[in-house]
Image (cartoon, rainbow, N blue to C red; front, side, top):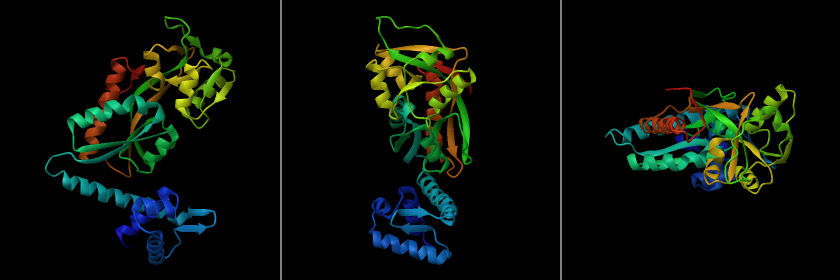
Length: 309
């Protein structure tokens, strides 16, 4: 069994098929197929189903992938650690961050790491919250940020803060509206919200349900960028965390009303995949981001409360 075969197989699983994987590993598709066929012959089981509908991973292939990914990750860690024997921190650090936090955090993270450790490259992988969790759980990133962990068996979590949720609306007056809004009054607000896969939507729905009310969504949009633009245009309001809308609020374009009776909040955590232990470099960046999160809360840039010190 060759490491190249493990790399090729992992790429097929992660890219969803032979064509995309061939581009990813920069090898001709026939050569890629031949290497996978040799790997399956050596193991004695079929790892992939090939058909007119595309390539799918067999149950045996899923089990084998977990081991292959662990082996490849450990080799990458060993190689990075060997290059860092001089004490210099070098290499690429991949960080998964939900899109609602990425725009708020990415410039600070990249600037601080670049200034302190110029030989480190930061790659931020953003997406919806559940996608971020899947990336961390699969060990495809060094670590990440998640809100209210669900079922992620391969993740170590450090809670950092409890963030508040707000109702954001287009500002109509020169001075911002600061009045709190009771939770039950949300059922009369014209809301623009993401789909039910997005955690913040589920929080609002479940809280209203417990209060005997029902969430009515006037416009369902998956893109945070679209939600932001519609709220700015006055089409409706949205319920979001502070980082998602902070820049528009600071520009004077939005009102942000606290939700009360009860308030809505969720836990934001740093998360490390157990399949990919932190290296010296990724541990350093982890600690930098931990400090950024804590400073943002204590200095009022992120509305919420620390749960760690």
